[in-house]
Image (cartoon, rainbow, N blue to C red; front, side, top):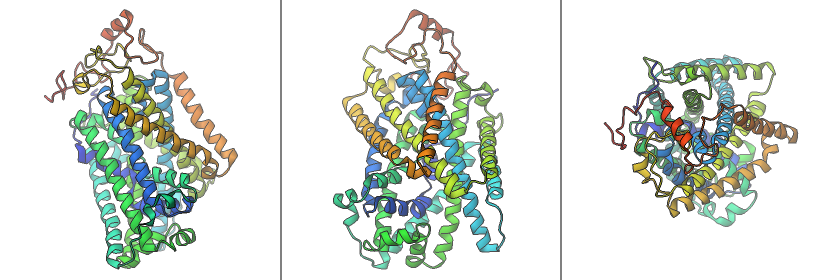
Length: 520
């Protein structure tokens, strides 16, 4: 059974996956009003800029460490390398829980929005869970096949979304409405509750780690992953910053808070119809549905790659690490995600939970906290890993002796075997501080997100329990492999174990690269 996937994604393909998962039109239509409401100010553009800066700083260390982390487990693999196997397995469990919940929350919300659109156009009313079931099946079929098919679908949806957002932006500019600079004022951004505004601004970037998750399908991962990471963050950040400013200006700086409070789900839709054309209201409603579908597909693909990597590493059943012989995709892992999503949606529907007020709010709130926590842990992992490497590190590509994790072909050449530079460590440290601040704000406001203190405690217990279960229940480490992941600690037993191990991808070498990291 083959274990390598088709390397067909370039920078553009991976960026499409990431930005599509971020769901631009959904953020503009649904998230912007929430930023205004929760912050109580019109400083959303500056808050989005702050989120962009935090992620760009984080990306410096994230991309520096990429050559040393070949697995498509992204945050899990980074934490494994930097903080040790147990912390890595705990992070993997949190990742699976978080992204499954985000997938389910989007699936249920999509059922509601698609049902509303169907009723509006045809008068036919179907239960949300039935529509969600259809969406699960469609996503399952797309994700079962080659990744470039999913990328093609996401690419079409993403182009339409960005065109719609740009149409709204240009409509505001052409309308002659006053373009106020007040939203960029630090005093305005710091008024009200800036922490909550920053939190919701940060949520618009989810899917950020997908640049590394798809490394097994990247044509040249050592170059593609860093470029895709920076392009994705900058594209999302610039688009959201400019669009939030123009939405505020279009609604009027003096009236936008009242308008958002009166109808947060439709205020931007109404603006689109006013500044572009009446038909734009219908267009944006359709695109919100397609945007949610693209987001659902993006999260599904991320969970599938986590299962695939954990299967290859022996953490989960090895069958999950197999690749379909025809489609060259992790089809069994994808099928598992489809089944898990369907079961959770079914149980939630049988429990008669409201698909928006309860399922979407609770599940996405818990998933959001989990993703932010993983990012913060990843920043610590990069700092520890980058700070302890020295010029004497001669580990060859594929060496397991230090960490039990195979280094990428060309990793030694890409980093020179040296510790991270001062600029890299400083940028990562600042990004990590920002992430922990966002995490603290999120936890402080968690009861508001999930509907009460009791629900918040239960959700927090689920996250902590998932981490502990992953850390404790994971397989015993290989003999001689330091459990703390210390790259400098080599023992004769560890070296012997490394020599006896089978490479994690089932091959002696990466077929795409030579031993020094060059493409064949």
